[in-house]
Length: 150
Image (tube, rainbow, N blue to C red; front, side, top):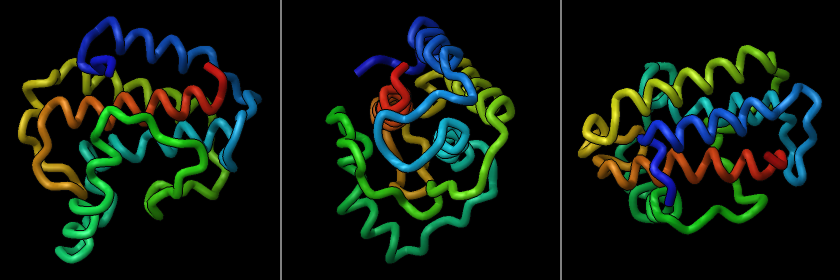
């Protein structure tokens, strides 16, 4: 798994994002490119912004035991996986705004570095290692950038 905390990989991911245009079409799935960018921002909003309701104890138990390994492992996501409700973006979004937000979140994460994320509490999964955070961040971005052919 590529290391999203390294400047080289961060720059590589940002270069892929920069190849997107407001009219880039998805190769699969229901989201348009602006919705996809907003969708990718949700992972970072859960880390940096207090705008998403945390799951209750029962739901966290379910997420930790049934979903966590799929999200933090190195196994790539399959196409058309179900999406958690808080990640579903139905409304239209401003392409440039969402692109800028996502790039800023990615840069912030890289600057904070792996050490910042070691043992950091996840919104849904409890404490994660820096490697699990890396896998979650990179795999999600890579999946959706591939979805849009970049």
